[in-house]
Every structure is written in structure tokens, then in C-alpha cells.
Amino acid sequence: MIKKILPAQAFRKLAALYADMQTSYSAHAQTLGLSCNGCPQNCCTSFFQHHTRIEWAYLLHGLQELPAERRAAYEERARAYVREATDALSRGERPSIMCPLNDDGRCGVYAHRLMICRLHGVPNRLRYPDGRAIDFPGCFRSQELCAGADSFPVLDRTALYTRLMELEVQFVGPRQIRALPRVDLTLAEMIVQGSPKL
Ligand code: SF4
Image (cartoon, rainbow, N blue to C red; front, side, top):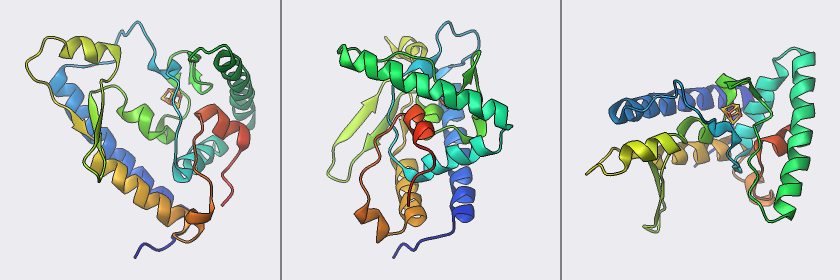
């Protein structure tokens, strides 16, 4: 049975999981010949929702470690992001807005960035217990590299995602998690809302 653990312990486990994601991502990117160097696009404008309180809390923990002035600037950008995204969605458009934590192409919270930020680039697959699977094509460079190839490596993130979900239950608590609503927030919304209520 999964038991609730202390936040500090959950954060250590999440850091270890992120390191494993990095190892897996790097191996796949290397096999594919994929590099971000000189990329004309920036995938930090991609519009994503995130779904765990453990990642949300860890991100906010990372922001807390920054100087107050820098954190305030990120928070202001996050509020602007939410306003712009809401406007775009109300026009029926998918938002394409730079992440509030991106400083001239560099991630301002690199060690605390979220799972999707880490795995987005390479082709990857998520399998569900009922047998369904969802494939994600990776970034545009990755799609170019794979186009026309007879085969290419696909990062199966099922085990990594399963570990993240187990960690989520440990962080929130197996009883408490059943009483809480599902998380479905952009990174900017997480920053605007502040640390998750547990
Ligand atoms: S958190 Fe960092 S890596 Fe993720 S979208 Fe924002 S700037 Fe990019």
C-alpha cells in the first residue's frame, strides 16, 4: 500500500525521476541525431496542461529559491500569459505564447522544469492499462528526422509516468487525493495560483 511521505522526501524522489527522464531522453535524442543547437523554433511556446501536484509544488519550490525580484518578474509574466491565453482561447485559437519562465531561449527554472518540458522533443508513447496507447511525434526537428525513416526509436514513457503518478499519491496522500479535483493547469496558471492546496 502506498503511504504519504514528507514533501522533502517526495522532492528528492522527483529529482531522481527527472534525472532518469533526462538519461532516457538523451539516449533517444542521440540515436535519432536530434539536437536543440541552432534550432530556429522554441518549443517553450507550446501550449500544455500539467496534471500533478507534486510537479506543481516542486516548480513553485524552485521559484522560491530565486531572488525575490526575479521571481516577481516571472509572476508578472505568468499573469500576462494567462490573460493572453484566455483571450486566444476565447477566439477559438490555440495559444502560442512564450513560457513566462523563458529568458531569451533559456529556461529560468531548468532543474525544476516539468516532465513535458523534458520529454517533448523525441517521439514518445504512453500506454494505458486498458491497452490503448497514445503516440506523440516529438518536436518539428524530430518529425523531420523521422519522416521517411523505415524505423526510429520511440521513448516509451509509461514507466516514467507510472512512477510520477505513484509519487503523486505519496506526496498528496492516498486518502486525500481521492477528495481533490483533477489538476489540469498550464505552468503559468500554476504560478498564478501559488503552491497547490493539499
Ligand atoms: S519551464 Fe522551462 S523548459 Fe518548460 S516551457 Fe518554461 S522555459 Fe521552457
